[in-house]
Image (tube, rainbow, N blue to C red):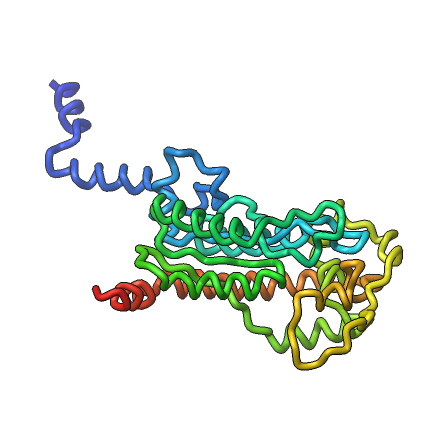
Length: 294
């Protein structure tokens, strides 16, 4: 008799089942820390869970394959963009698209190793990529570029999103300069010029991938502005080659790794704010739909 009573007490009662089911579902529901943020690391079974946790946000970290003087890897821009994207997305869950190296880099075609696709392919590939990302459940796509030469192309790409109706919005991460960070970097810099494979980029790579930085090769070529095209108030495509034919702008000799930490921390903090802002936004897509008469 006592054994029967014990079994009856142990058996879940009808009124207890909803609570038990809710607890079970809560335990089974994936948390952000349970799922990778990198698209290529997710299983197909987990992918739908990831889109839900990301609240429709997917980040495309973009760069190019180009020479970075003699001392940095050609994928420097991609490493930087992906590093800040992955770090920010782990703090505020978003899915990060795999390495994307198709960007505007015609000005480096004369250097070995450069991958420079045609302008039509560049546009179409990014357009198709965004469409595929949207087809997989994301309606808020953030472009994060680590390559300065992509700026005008990506702004144009975002503007052309109004060419036809879409069920997603493309945003371009456009970080503002943090004055305090800029001040501290200026204090640490040994030189006053730069822009490509310089003190700053070198410092960043010394944090992200120190194994790929060759400080003994920093002075093998000049990063001095050669100013070979004295034509003010006009823009022409050969301007970069006219100034920096070695694809090196600045002097990385005195690169301080602390600069890399400052740049990375500031960039991640800004991107986290943008992710949270875009997750909460309901206006951009609504206005885009209204633009097309809905």
